Every structure is written in structure tokens, then in C-alpha cells.
Image 1 (cartoon, rainbow, N blue to C red):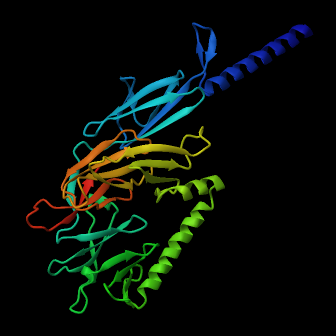
Image 2: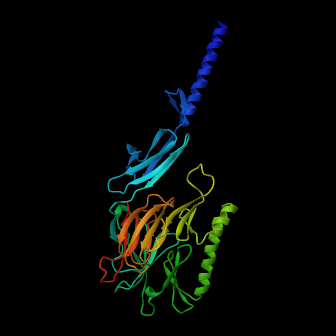
Image 3: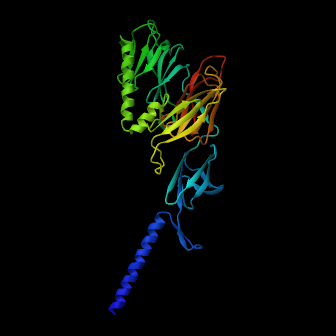
Length: 376
């Protein structure tokens, strides 16, 4: 009797161990293959999109809507396609590995972006602040001559952002005609007078304007601040990464400070210091975009640090161009806008919902204004 009891206990113990083992393997992505009578490894694709609600196609078969996961996938290469009415489609090949979740965070762009005016009295020489949150521009229209500020943030209830007059021209000083320089912390602007050692300093925090006696000394101080900020940023990376970045020609940091892009022989490369893929312990480098030989291209980061905005023109002086957006790995290049664009002025909103350009719909008037292109 006692032996039967021990045997029963031992059998239950073995069953519990087996069940627990199976549960653990299933949780790790393994599934029971009834034909082969064995556990086979599987992976997961987690798909999200901005905006969400796009239909997910797996190898051209509709599966579900974003944001969701596709589970129990055998290790293989799959084609993911996202479709949402009113937006450009998104496609990507994804390699699935067993016991791993592969993430896709897709950016969907309106197929017919909407343009809205942000200024109405003319604008010229727009300059983006170092933090990417504000634009300073000048206008010479009557009753509005001076230096203006426009914040690149969305307002509640879908209201259009309004620009504010910071410094009004006077009979003594035409501030709107002078050079404007941002401070590294984006809290001050220097209005530099041509051919003079002096200028004016405007403090956006205190809303005050003061005379600056030594412009060159202030510029030198700001350059030192920028250099110190870059050195402090690099302190958190290994010696190899610091040396790599130091060897790159004019690296441009991403908004999240985890990547840089640079140009070499008209090719644009992205050096990703901290890849999102946890399997990749080392930095990655992508050849993202090749500048056309017959065009002039300007490139800026999109705020999510996963895309680049590209402005292509026949020349910088040309008043027509095309805006594109591309993933850092060179995939999913999409056209945003084609039409009149003055110079290389291209400024994204901080949340990525819009980009700002300088344009006009009446070239004969020669009055250019800032317009937003709504991407979502």
C-alpha cells in the first residue's frame, strides 16, 4: 500500500515537472507539432503604427489591425504590409527567430497632406532653435516689421499655432534686416549688426532686449558651450564609439542622441549607437540615402530619430522641390510634398505631426509665408 502511494506521488511529481516544462517552452514561443510529434520553436512579430488602426498583411494575407502581435510564427522571412485609408502603404521584410519578439513601429504618412498657413504678413530668414522647438523669422511688412517667434508645437482643439512679435523695428534699428543667432540653450537670440562689434541680445525667458557690446566674445562663448555639451554627451559611450564619431565628417546627432548621420561621397550614412534590436550588442551602420548627382539635397532628422527628412531641389536657389521621408535603414522612402519651396527651409514639429516650409501660392507677389504640411 505504501509502495503504491509513493508510486502515485512520484507519478504526479513527474507529470507536474513535464507540464511545467511544456508551459515554460510554450511561453518561450515553442509549439507542439503534431505531425512531427515534437516541440518546435516559434517567434512573434509585434506591429504598431503611427497613427494606429492600420490593417496588417502577413505575406499578403490580412491578419489583424495595429497595435497587435502575430504569434506562433516559424523562423523564416516574412513580408509585412500595412494599409490604412488615406495613408501611404508600408512594407517591410522581417526575419523571425525562435524565442524572440521582432518589433515594427511603422510611420504612416497621409497620401494627400494638408497645407495650412502659419504666417500671413510675409516671412524670411527663418532659423530653427537648437532644441528644435521654435523658429525665429523676420518680416518687413508694414505694421509688422521686426523679428517674430513661432513655436513648433500642436495646440489643443486643433488650433493653428500663432506667431508672436518679439522685437519690433524702430527708426534707429531695423532688427528684421540683421543676422540672427540662437544661443545653445535656445533661450536667447543675438541680433548681430553688420560691420559692427556690437549687437542686441534678446532673452526669451525674461522677454528683455539689451545691448551687447562684444558680439565676437559672446559667439566664442556659445561655441565653447556647444563643444562642452558634445564632449559631455560622448562621455557616456565607449572609447571605440567616441573614436568612430570623431572620425566622421560633420556628424549630425539625432534628437534622442543615440545616432548620427553623415555624408561621404554623396552617400548618407546613419551610425546607430544603440540599436532597438536587443540582439545587436554592437552599433550598426546603414547606408540610408544616395544624393542624386543632378540635384541639391538637404537632410534633417525627423523627431522620432528613426527617419530622415530629405529635400531635393535642382539647386538651392530653385523655388521648387520635393520632400521625402525615409527610414534610417533606407527602407520605405515616401514623398510628402512637391511644389514651391524657398531655399532649404524644412522644419519638423517636435511631435512629428507636421513639417514647416517657406512657400508662396502667388510667385508674382514675392511674399513668402511659413506653411505647415500635416502628415497625420
